[in-house]
Image (cartoon, rainbow, N blue to C red; front, top):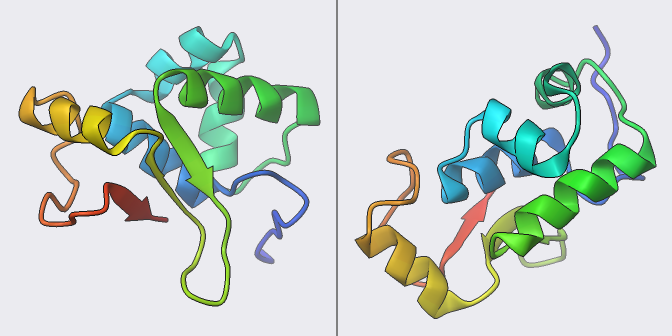
Length: 113
C-alpha cells in the first residue's frame, strides 16, 4: 500500500497518537471528547483514511482544549506535539496523568511524532 501524504492536514497520524499519549487518552476518549466516530480515529491513526476537514478540526479543538498543541515541522525538527503551557505539562506528569510511554527526561515538554 502506498504511503499517504498528510501535508494538507493540520497534523499527521503519528502526531495524533502522540497527543493522545500526552493526555493519556484512549481512542474512545478522544472520539467522545471530539464528537467524532471512533472508526475514523482508528483508520486515520493507521493511515487508512483521509478524514474530512471538519473532523480534523474537531480533533484539533478537543486536544487543544485539553492543553496540548501540534507543532509543525521546520528546519530544526519534525512535526510533534507539546503542552500549551510548560507548567501544566509538568503538573500532569507529576500527577501521573500522562501516558507511561513518554520520555520523562525531556525538559521542554514536547514529544516528537
